[in-house]
Length: 413
Image 1: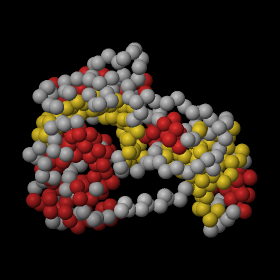
Image 2: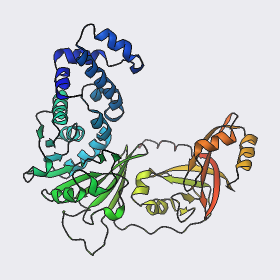
Image 3: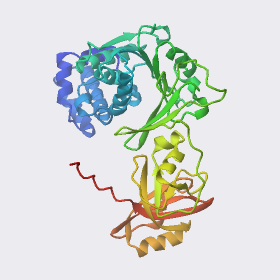
Image 4: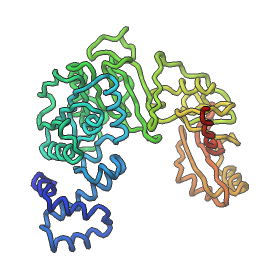
């Protein structure tokens, strides 16, 4: 889609065409396109069909109510922050007292929308003309144009000194796909950290796979998951647990604070002093799988301490305990069998127990879940979970089932 096509979509004819395509089936696109081209220009029909597909994809991130009012580019849908994550981050900024913010590398405006809905005045900046037009259209479509100013500019040339905060979302994709080197971001992470120093508060969105050693010592590093899926990591500056950009750490090489945040909730784990890994021990009745954000933040030890648990292996992020305790930071499984890995024995055991619904999880194992399912051929009326992992260094299989949900607390009287 180019700017001419996008301008056509914003005409009354374009809006009406998009409205008519809200529930269309992409599998019937040829028939739909043929019918629509009898009444509309071919270019407009192609642009509308493309936009309809993007809106359907965007529902997962923005929800239907917003997605079918907004406009998207293919890259914009891919890189946009999930609305729940953006709302959480906007809430953190608002809680810090931020009333104005420069959103650099704003993309299609997903974060700017969440910030404006939190009552923050936003300058949204991007250098791509089409992306800027889409971001501006989205602010207008959602009635937020009074709080969002969209500007086409090179973010490295924008003066942000007059804003309470800066948010930066460097591009992490190149011509060959995702970029994992922070200095290959556009703009590079080192520039983003310097730019963060222009405001009292700042946040930089980064890839969740960033090595801890690449995190600036003055930053609070936060890993965020939504419904169990790790979505992003953010470097915070000026927060209660972080310091201003450029501030020297207490001692050379001292890492900054880390946080794991789980949505919905939010539930945040942010220890003042991270704990050392607990000693490994035998597998107990309960096995806990820490949330991915907890693992990325290297806070498994904190979860183990909360559960009075231990690791099953010094290199594996599974926690085991003898009692079931509720925690938002891990999923619990009741373990009935702890066995050395043996495919024939597993197949016989599952057949004996009439297991037809088999969930396979793995950590520290080279066996792929689908490969295991094909080989054991589960059949029967019962369900089970098999966890392929290492216990005390040995390939093992743990058999059990998810813990029953905790009963809701009785209302207070």
